[in-house]
Image (tube, rainbow, N blue to C red; front, side):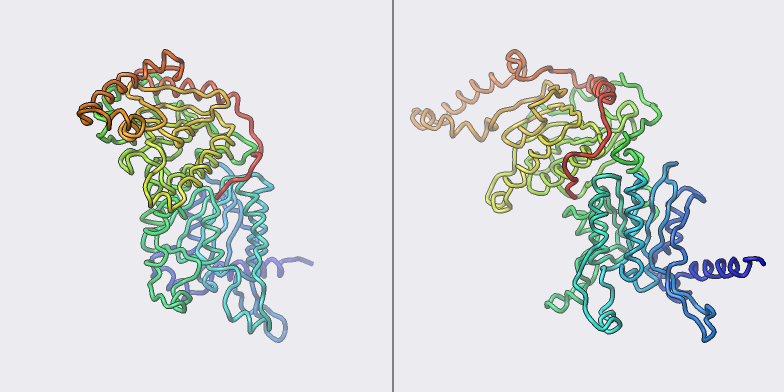
Length: 515
């Protein structure tokens, strides 16, 4: 006796599953400019590498004789695959079946997928195009009772944030738990115009008296500016490319170290223009990104969170082939003063580097925490203290280049002073508890006010004090360990990574990642 009838049924069931929500719903989905979940998986992973798990999950329809006559597949596609030649777990919502609502059998598949990534110690990739965990209000009538909200998957989500790289792409309108799955990641993207993210969509929001369309409520122009989502892209294909690149800088899990890329850039390369990159006039600004790009391996800088927390630039890069985490001050915003968003961006990024054992290179030009009534009302000191705590909890290797200012409490966190760090200053560096411009009138108030000519007296005092702000005088007192020619920065950055990489030890962090 052969098992061919069962094999035939197996193939029939798989064929039905491939139909997703049916031709009509698939057409509607594609007419909205979106790919189907299976098209997304095929485009994202390495060719022919996807091994689906749970493809038979769903709800069968049977005739009176018990013969299968129809099948509605589960609205979550998941499995293992290869991305950049390395294994990952991929999960994708199928919006053509019940709008991708994360209820029913999907809950078990979500848990299975998250646990699989954790236990196999490989990255988790989420293609999110679904809604909340409770599904439709119709479930009340179907079940005959209501449910207390629970998130059985969430313990696995939190565990994965501490264990494996997690990337999430919002590829449609995502709400409730769908939105939470996007935000609970190490790197997230939205597609401009076709992705929205919210706690509740426009029909629910209308009940509180706010009539608004879905893009104005939760489009990428909102959530990539407030830090809920890291970046926005113009197409799903671009989202795939960016998340694949992000993963290329990271290890498979915290129990590995990030791989070294092929070295294609001279570690001794010098950019002559760096000697004049910082203006002599302290009131003039400069562009920080070209400086970063001149020092890291050519073409390797991958910026993260460009549209929020703009007083710093953060991203991953390679130096002599090794992955590094870049933090760089941007004087174009608030004169380099850190606001609430900047401190939050900094904290989260340092946590990423700490979690995955990525050395930090910090380009310092910090005017301090933002001042004024708005900053005080926003609670800047609370968020600033969290940023300082992130630095002092970190154990990863750290190298700071003080390229201009280092003032106040914010600058005190440019590195952990309780352990050895690499630190260099450019000749343009200057530092202190307060900028001279702001602190002079307070420190010398009596002397200035008591002078016959207060304006002239102030100028005399300022000239006298400024003569003492030369970084060379600080070097004489060993306040700064070394002052360098800016053109030597790349060589010293390469020396830093090659010195510390052998010291890195994989393993779980002593504290959790803060999403």
